[in-house]
Length: 209
Image 1 (tube, rainbow, N blue to C red):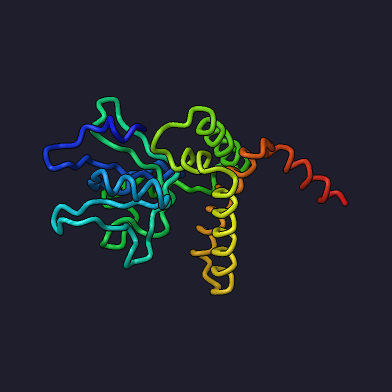
Image 2: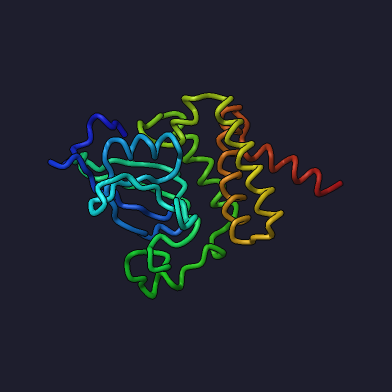
């Protein structure tokens, strides 16, 4: 995504659709300006522009329900943004998962029904594509362009957050932090040109010992 190609409206805003990267459920519709887009890319978390308050706002700043960005895409007309996120709590201020009414189909969906290996293989493939294509504005692109030191720093930060979540005995927090750690580990594996299948081979050997 090329930020310079975005077609902002007369107020310097562009609509942003936020979608859960796992379930594909649409969580909310917000607005972003150039500054909030830059902050989102740099922090890896969603920042928006409040039209009512006329100021930037960081999703989850007060509630703790931040949204970690997996990818950002610009539509064909360059006038709308799609954000794939890993939400750490409800997206809506009312406490519901989504700002939109949930359909019966969505309510019946279960992440547990998705094969674990399929998820990990898909994650590895997406990260590989981001590395090869380096789409502008994508958080994964940002990590690769910053290099090994930045990637290692993020892995360390996520590992520390996993430890804190475990010490706090917060199952919900631990679940999300563990997922974030796995994501950054996959980025590290790609940076080192080490496939996930080789890691699985080591796990299988240890299991047999």
